[in-house]
Length: 70
Image 1 (cartoon, rainbow, N blue to C red):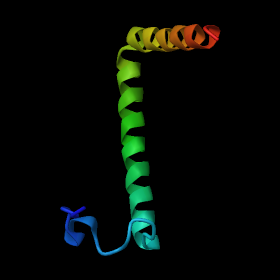
Image 2 (cartoon, rainbow, N blue to C red):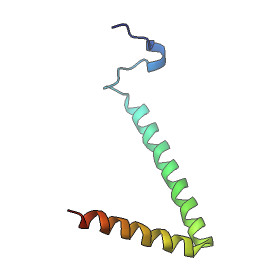
Image 3 (tube, helix red, strand yellow):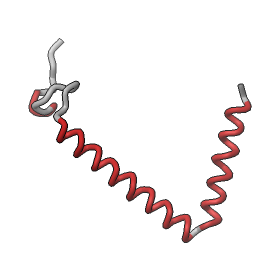
Image 4 (cartoon, helix red, strand yellow):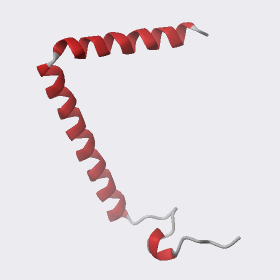
């Protein structure tokens, strides 16, 4: 089978062996994105508490329904 994806697109390191700096950069970027998302959710819930409570109740009902089905 012919590989249609060039090595330039995949990067210089093989898939299983990422450099430590690349891994730490990816970790830091992911942590920043999660923090921004959490802050956005917190500010939305503070502005609209009814929507936040409704969402929490809905998640609880769905979780209870799924766990009860067994």
